[in-house]
Image 1: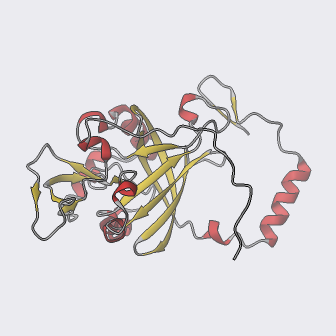
Image 2: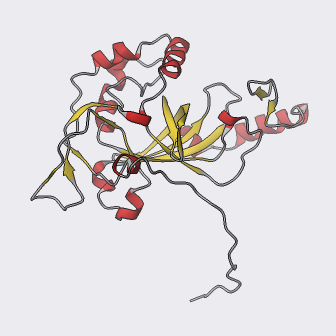
Image 3: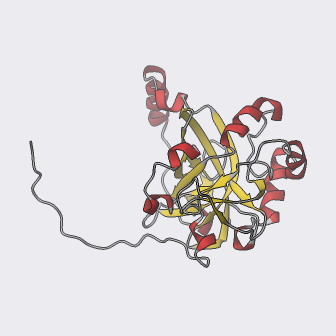
Length: 264
C-alpha cells in the first residue's frame, strides 16, 4: 500500500507494483547479499530542524551503520513502517575526527548537545582560539529525544555514552513534511534540537513520538542523568547559535561543464 500525506495524496505517485515485480524482488533478495543493508544494526528515532527555517521540525528515523568507533553513517527515513520514505542521510563522527575537519566544513555540522544558557566562554591556553570551554546542562541524548525504539535502556547505554561527544552532518533530500510527492530541489542542511531559542523542539512532536512508542522522554531524561557530559564544544558547529540565527541554504546555479578530463 502506498504512503499518503495529510491530504490523502499518494507519495510518491505511481502504479501499484505488479505480481511479476514482487516475484523479481523476492528472487533478487534471495540471491543477493545486500551486505550494506544488513550492516544497518540500529534504529534511532529523534528530531531535526531545517537550517534555513528552524520553525520546520520533523521526526526522523535513522537506520545506523557503525563503520568504526569514530564514524557512523545513517539512512534517514520519515517513519519506521515498510513504506517509509528515504528522506536523507546523516554522517556522525567522534569529537576526535571532527577536530581534523577544516573550519569551513565544521560549519555544516551540528552537536548532539544542549547548551544550558548563554555561559561565559573562556579561551583555553591549551586549545586553539577556535575551541572554547562551555558549561553544559544536558545533551540531546540525555534529554530523552534520542531513543532506540523497543530496546531496553540498559542495552543501549554504552552506545549512548559513545555518542555523547559526537557531531553530525545531515542532508535532507526529500521534504515530505511539506507534502512533496517526489524529491524536489537541492538537498537541505539539517540541524539538531537545542535547549534554547529557535532550537527547542516542539513539545507536541515529542509527545506524539512518545505516545507511539509508549515511552516517556522525561523518564529517559531522569534515567540518563549520570551519563557523562562533554567538557568541550567546538563553536564552529551549530553555526546559527554563534552567528545571530543565520543558517545555510543550497542554491543551484548553471556552470560551464568540464568537457575534457586530464588523464595520467
